Length: 435
Ligand SMILES: Cc1cc2nc3c(=O)[nH]c(=O)nc-3n(C[C@H](O)[C@H](O)[C@H](O)COP(=O)(O)O)c2cc1C
Ligand code: SF4
Image (cartoon, rainbow, N blue to C red; front, side, top):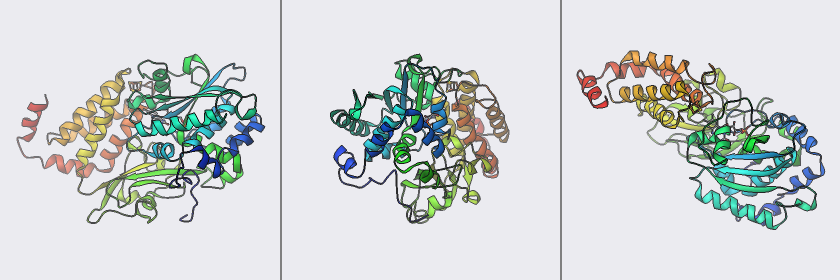
């Protein structure tokens, strides 16, 4: 769909796009006025009908999440997940730095629908510039009466704060985020209770991603039927896709979820193809945690369903990294293992020890001291950690195992050949340094 008109990125490139004046001159804050004339339940219903699936990684339907809140609740809190810690994802960053009022409008509508009195935007600490942009936009919204007491002249009041993150990957996990917001170490909580029942400050809480909330004003303004008309029925609405690596035009692009990995990589209005002299060997299409696909799998659709058919965990953050054929897969394997080994918060034995073992084994392999059996031990370790076998508090180890498993399964030949080609005596020397 090359002629698709951007929706979420429609204000990118417009002079002054971060200001309230420009946002309103382009139709901004019309949706929230409409929403405030509806009942909160009607807003939830519309978002449910739109089948807006969460853009933060798991793809859980937003409207359904909102309807899990207890009916008799007295105080609800909304957390906007702007931690964006998944390597190499930058869709939320682009949304916040180009159109912060779109996020604020979506936040107000979601807060109204969930009957929240306070919205916290939990933002990755490395987002220095984006923090100031969003904070300025919040200040403008307060000054205009769009945030604070009795907003837009109605009886509804909403406070909104930006809370800067703690610089850890696990603080993006919704209960790690909640703990961190409470001022504690960002250790994910055992569930149940789920945040909808007992979340921030033990209140019913909804956590939604920046991109998910940025979709909400468009659903309210143009209707659920318009939204479901974009993309396949299981993956409705516009979606942002990032691409990085040795492509001609790395960046963030918007499209319905009808594109393939090949489209993202090669289309002139997207990645634009590989840099001269480079050939793509593999892609991590959904951020690091979803796993890898090889060049003969590039027809995989970037939607919520297709990635599973290719052995991946899901669509994830739809941020693709391209790996060219000059890159040694042992190095990719080690990079992945090192990231998760470093980021495990350490509460659960299988995750703490499993990610650390995999890191050690992958390092040994990358340094030329690996053994073919190490690959099997890594696969076995990967199968014995994570939420799926019910062995961990959060999904970090599931995200740790998918890249490891898929790299080993899909590039086993290359890894084994490299291990067998190690010069004699090297393993002994490397191991003496590592141990
Ligand atoms: C280890 C880990 C890290 C995560 N990091 C993020 C993140 O940076 N941003 C995000 O929106 N969701 C992240 N998530 C998913 C959140 O837990 C949660 O599902 C999401 O914020 C819900 O928003 P959504 O339903 O709008 O997608 C992470 C999950 C895990 C297990
Ligand atoms: S699974 Fe890992 S990251 Fe998640 S709580 Fe347990 S130790 Fe921490």
